[in-house]
Length: 101
Image (cartoon, rainbow, N blue to C red; front, side, top):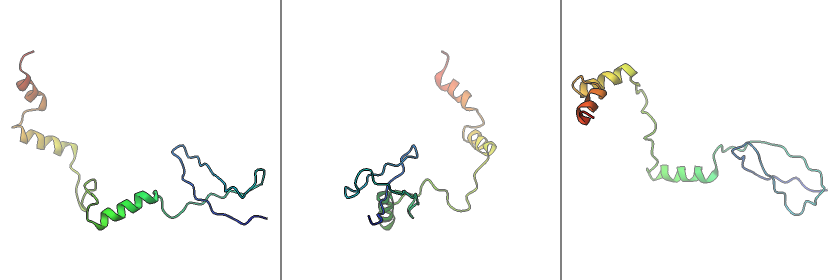
């Protein structure tokens, strides 16, 4: 009788796994496969790189908004754009830059 063996595999983008068994399990042997998620939800190399970068103070958090940040509405963004252009629309500015075609 063979002893139990734990084999970690990575789930592919198409949600499949390929299990390569050790050579000491002969072909034709019936085995039971149990799928259980391991603690890390990301690849170990990615986690390790993030941890190292964070320790060095080099992990970018630019893609995350600071706590308490209020996201402006579309109207607020439009109003700010009009203030910056002296009240003219982008179309009017482009017409001025391009001139007559």
